[in-house]
Image (tube, rainbow over all chains, first blue to last red; front, side):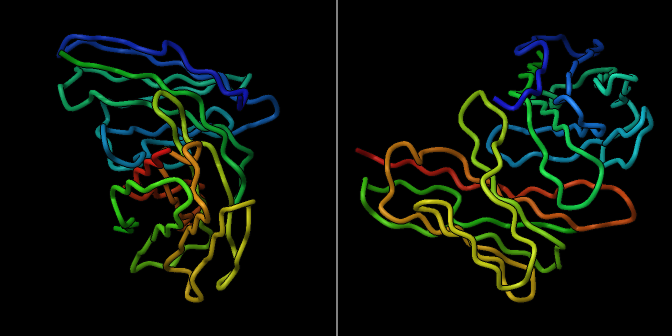
Length: 113
Length: 113
C-alpha cells in the first residue's frame, strides 16, 4: 500500500456532466500529478500541482482542471464530459524534484455513457 | 513529442521461462523507471535507472539503461505466475521544471503455471 488514496474508486457519468475526483497524497509529499490511463494504454500526464499551483500540463483541454489544498491533497475536475474521457484516472504523489519516486493511488475508474 | 515504445505489447509464457521486455525512444531521458501494474491497481515502482549503461537487479529481474539513455530493457529469469501484470516504463525528459514522466504503452505479461 502506497499511502495514496483516491476516491471514488468507480464512477459512471453521463456525457456533458461534470465530475470531481479526489486524491490524498502520501504524508510528507508536496507534489501531486494526475494521469489518464485509457484501456490498454500507458498513463498520460494531465498536470501536476506543487504548493497549490499548477506546475506543468500535458496535452489536455482546459475542461480538465485541478486544485491542490494546503494539506497537499488534490482534486481533478472534468467539465462537459465526453465519451473518450472514460478511463482510469491515477494520482501520484511525490516530493518535488527530478528522479524522485512517485507513489500511485489505486485510481478512479470513470465511465462516461 | 517524446515517445516511449515498448515491445512486445503482449507476452504469454510458461512458468520457468526467461523473457525480455524492451523500452525504446528516439529521445534522451535523464532517468527511466519501470513499474508493474495489476488490474484495478495503480502502477508500483520497481526500479529507477539514472546512469547510461547502468544495470540493476531486483531478485529475478534485471534492468538495464542504454548507454545513450534512450532505451532500457527488463529481463525476467525463471518467470513465475506472480510476475503476471502490465509492465510500464516511464522516462523523465527533464523539461523546464516540470517533474513529469512519459509512460510507455506497456507490455502485458501472462505467466502460465
